[in-house]
Image (cartoon, rainbow, N blue to C red; front, top):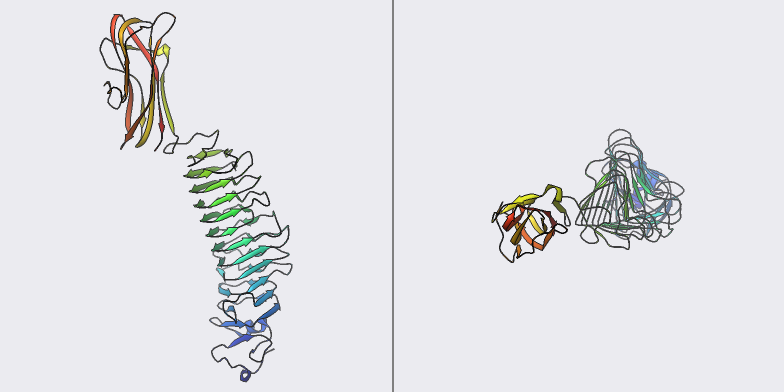
Length: 435
């Protein structure tokens, strides 16, 4: 039903919905039917229980502008054709179905929600089910809440869900995971208080966000999607008694913190690439099948940091059965390690075996082959005793810090004064990356 245009005092607003004399439509649905692409429908304060078929290019806004609590739509808003629809400053509430459903099966259909409240009181809120990869629901500056158990924030089988500067709360303590099985789930600068499960060809990208499930003791992110370029950056994950992250495919984690009291703060059968990230809860363990990198704080127990990360360790050993002959007054390489650029702490254990006698024994760490170091910086020397039949003479050189600008071979070098027989040496050199 429409009022006459004479009742409309707002000449620039062709479509005003409400019950006052200033409106020209009683229902939002009738206004949408009359509107064309490029039109904006202004909705006066009130509650409207309607299931709406959105029209591409037709936008819905609160008549009162930025006061998003004055207009409530209870029902399902569906976009089934290609195009873009904008909804702003409106409270949207479930009515035993989705709040917003994008179902277009051809070209992309996209719904943008600006400064809206999303009240999931009795059903999962957002859905993308149409078989178009470009389908999209984009939430900007939105508030959302789960009011009961058994429901989630979103469920997708196609397309992309994007949250930018949003706060998605969970007063109903629902442990039901929001699911992404479409193209992408992107969460930026947001608070998200519910679990998410990523699967199929979907990718996930989380930036600067708080993924907090400590109250419901659920895994904030379970990532098993095969989509390329999945990552989390500068974000916080709290699983409570559950793991804080489960990875079943591949995920890059950069400058993130994970809090959990579970046996494993990070779990899963996939690959997680950690860059300057920390395990800050009581659990410092990871059971993920493949992990590259270490953590900035709380190195994961049971998994050695890989090449290029703090804690990386390289060792070279020459066993006693492979002892190397050390001639009189001759600098002799025993073992060596190749270290890439960075800061390393290097230590050496060098033993002389019972094959001769001598009067001076030296253990050196050197960046030059068969060249002794400078005492006391990276070398130690001691007079006898010579090794005997029952014991070797061992010399331990504690950590020496080396700063390397390029890949460098570092040598364990033996030197001794041989007074009789043939002297032999064996040992171990160990390097640990500290910078």
